[in-house]
Length: 145
Image 1: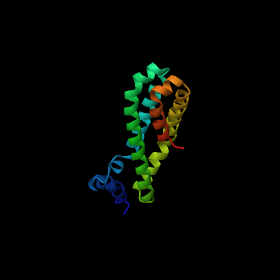
Image 2 (image 1 turned 60 degrees about the vertical axis):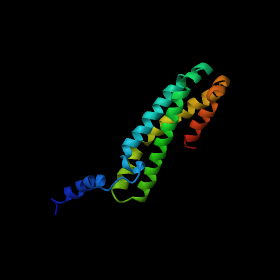
Image 3 (image 1 turned 135 degrees about the horizontal axis):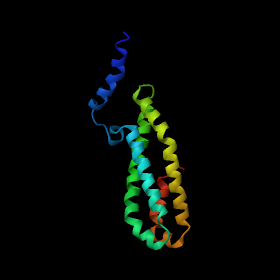
Image 4 (image 1 turned 135 degrees about the vertical axis):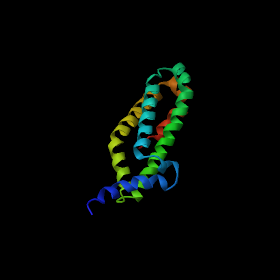
């Protein structure tokens, strides 16, 4: 019986891809989705840090729109995966998803905090607010309350 234990641990790894593609949210491993969120938030923070006035805000507008949409999609996927994982708690797959999310959660939280800090700073600059205010508010709306 002890020789079968490794088989039971490895078998699910081969069966998961064979289960079919239910949705984008559940088709990627949790760590991959969390990494996508972290990478996107880092890019957003770096872009926001470079905005100092209305002129630099206008120059960054297109890229910021793209990154905001990408971040929104990544956060939605990660949230959907979290909800799916909660439904699978105790099944191994759900436990792995929750463990992966717990591992990267502090990093994501820190990154999202960096966005909040930059958005607050930029909304305090009138010329920036005129140039990209609605976009900053949209980005702020993506952040957890």
